[in-house]
Image (cartoon, rainbow, N blue to C red):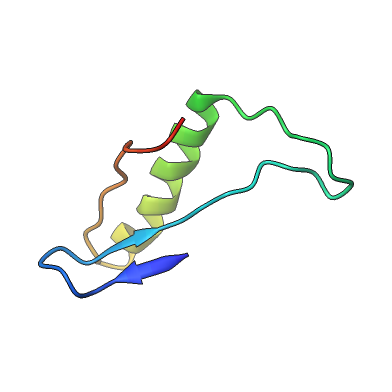
Length: 59
């Protein structure tokens, strides 16, 4: 995870590696990733921190 605060719009980049503990590749659907991204943005909102969960990603 990287936090960029050197720009007018602070933001975080998060990279996931879709492998299981034994090294097998996990098949995670795009819809599941979108849902998780949305869920991760909800927690800061609950604490009064407005964030958005963009869908810009390298598929």
